[in-house]
Structures are given as structure tokens and as C-alpha cells.
Length: 413
Image 1 (tube, rainbow, N blue to C red):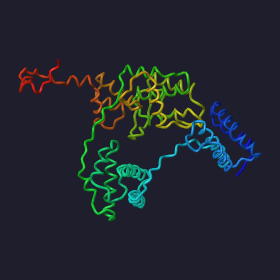
Image 2 (image 1 turned 30 degrees about the vertical axis):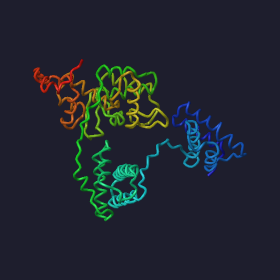
Image 3 (image 1 turned 60 degrees about the horizontal axis):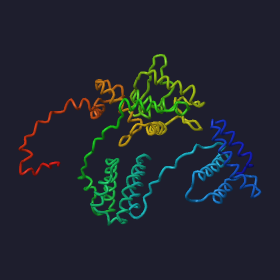
Image 4 (image 1 turned 90 degrees about the vertical axis):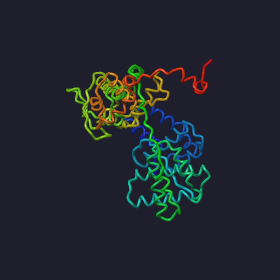
């Protein structure tokens, strides 16, 4: 397929305009073509663009390694031309997911399990999880100099588990299935599953990260609301800090969820599937109105929040999390050792309610918890109430410090 290059570029520019790309972005593409593919084709006395010609331009004019930002932009400009030439529209830029390969002798035996799970019609999500965890184990074995099945020992398995911090339950479960499959398929003589079965670990309870009321106020006031992005991020942040909404619920918030007459937000929580009614506070409502009137680009989407770059699509959880993390990071609030995403603001709201001695069942209802036990985890950050439970330390006699010549007491000179 081929097309006259100036006509193809003109069609791409019209597509950008009709899909609400910013003028700066349109001008950027125009410049990339003007100083990129156009002089390249002129030098070759060509006027008809083909996809293979675009690839030749990339090969001849762009380095194959150590790509700079400008180089990636040039490649993107060719991808845009290819999209419109072959599809009649321009696809949104996507991130290619990482492929967790299983290679080598051990990887080949792991792949047999993946094939077996596929024959059992396990979901693609489950298959990807197994590939991820088995790939981690394979990488660990290779880094330990183990490349054959005979080299795997109990020590390697336990060392791998001891270095695993995230999703340890899922990792152990995946290895258990792998070792059982190997044993039943006579791939290994020993049953490594016995090692996993007796393996015990202590699941450490995580203390929720939260910010004080003053810190939350400083974060809210740090946002520059003069731009459309600032207005959007401010509204999303208030939904998290004032109402405790999760990132997924903020992203999925639709116009139909807001009852302006009754000043309520009614939605079904994405995580639990349970409905929740929340008051539409004045500050929150005004922030949403400000964004809709002066910050939101034109879009047919029924979602309140949309992306800040064309093509303007409904916001997703990643957009919400990234926006709020960036706001908190750029504020003057100290985030050392603390998570600073939307959930930290949810924890902060719970902390504020506890500080005001709000009953647990009220907090549970406000946060949309289906069980009160879930809310009890926030008691660990209610330091004021915990101090009330502290037991007075009894005085210690001098004999304690002088016993055995003071061997248990280090004096400071």
C-alpha cells in the first residue's frame, strides 16, 4: 500500500484536529515530518510513501541503540504514518507488556507445566501469573549457577523463598503446583513439594501510610489549579482525601453517579461490588464543576475524568494513581518512608475520623467496607487512643542495675 506523502501527512493532521490533539502536539508532528521523512524522500526523488520506506528511514537515520527522546519521537512519527496508511486511523500509543520467558533446560520443564495448565483451560491471567513467578525462580537459579534439573536442591528453594518479599503466598502456591507436576510427570525423582508443604513464614502486618490533617491540607493547597490538568487532579485528589474513594472508583465516576439536587454521590464500588452513598461536599462539588467548565476537553465520554492528552479517553486507575502520586511528591510534605498514592489519602481520612472519636461502624460505612474487621486495621495508626491503653511502667529498684556487678547495665559517662 502506498500514498503520496504530502497527502498522507495532511490526512494525519486532519485526524489529529478531529480527535482534539493539542496544537503543540500537532505542530510537533508537523516538524518531525518536515525535518525527517520529507527531506529523506526528497533526497531519493520519491513522492509515494510505503511502510517499507518508513522502515528504511528508521534504519538509515536513527541509531539502533542508546535512543534519545528525539529519536523515539522520530520513530513514533513513522508509526503514525504507517497506522493511517494501513488502518485509516492512528492508534493510541501503548506499552508493550514484558514477556516472561522460560528458557534453558529448567525453563523447558517449566514450560511443560504452562502447556498443561493451558490444556486445563486456565484463564490467561492465571497463566501469566504462573509465567511471572516461575520466571523469577528460573532467574534466581541461573544467577546461582544452576542450569540443569539435577542441580536444584532444597537449599536453592528455601533461599529463593527467603528473598521473596511480594506475593509470597502466590509464589509458594506456584512452586507447589510446579513441583507436584514434575513429580507426577516423572520429571524429577524427588518430591520438592514436601519442602514447600512444611515451609512456614510469618506474614507481617503492614502499617498503613497516612498524612496528618495539616499535611493533607498542604497537599491540597500545593496544586496549581490554573491549568486543566491541575483542575482535574485537584478534583480527583479531593475525592480521595475528603471522601476516601479508591482510585478505581474515582476513575470510573460517571455523570450519572452524581446527584446534584441531593448533593450525593451514588456508585457501586469496583473492588467490592457493593453500592455506597456519599455526601457531595461543597469543596468537592465545586472542584468537579470547575474542572468540567474550564479544564475538561471536549469528549463524548460519560466518565467525569478523562486523559489530559489526545485522544481523550476515560481516565483509568493508573491515570488517577499517577496524578495523585505526582501531586503529593511535588508538595512540600515529607514522604520519606511513606506510600503516597490515593490509598494513603484514604488512610489519612480514616486517621482523621479516629482522631475525632468517630465510631468504627461509621468509619466502615464511610469507607465502603463490607466488614467492620477490615476497618479495625486503622486502629494501629490511632496513636492518641493507643496511648490511652498504655500501662504505666513500674519503677525499677537499684538492685536491678547493680546485680552481678552491673553486668546488665551500660552506664553512660
